Image (cartoon, protein in one colour):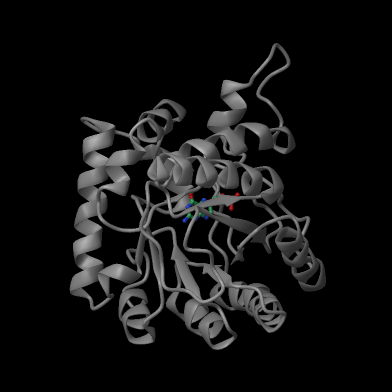
Length: 283
Ligand code: PMM
């Protein structure tokens, strides 16, 4: 298992990243933490429930979501990042925009999580390189309004690995230290439910890219479809047990981290896996 040099994070097990969406429209929890005070309180609650770090985002990336004005994203995210960092929480900022990333780093964020892996904003890679902070590079093809029109692959696993590999080279060529890069298969981003399962079945291939691996399946639509009944897909708020199952699978595949909305179950899951791995390596 590859880890990241971030003070305050465990290095001996998969870390749990709790999600705070400061948005009115995220699929999983849209609107609930839109008020900055409520968002900060929610971030602290996630830590009490077992999150090792908190990912703060101000722009919904669900399929079809419309882009947010840059100033609005800054207004949503930066105060929440600042207050959580001041409270001693390790914060990652979920943004595609260099300006928001820069202001968040100044406010105390320790990681930049860019779902576009530096493709949306040409200023992002130079900023992260200069700041010397860890950078999450996710597999990404297009912005939210059109991303589900880009789910054509000859072979989803090989194509996603190749496209992600190409983006990793761009990011490294742009000056980001390889040991500070986290890779993410980008579940649900220009992928159908079936394609997500194919990628999840081969997490070892993503881990083998040589960077810490982040898996973010939490509450996503393909879990709702898997657990559907005659009424329809399993509602978003009732997908946390399945999410924790994916956290188990991810930790067993050697993931550095899992990004989840409900950390308690995943915090337990990653501890079970760490204990078993320690036993297996002792034995
Ligand atoms: N998914 C969402 C948002 N941010 N970041 C990374 N690195 N990987 C993801 O898969 C990812 C992400 C969308 O989910 P949300 O609306 O619940 O935050």
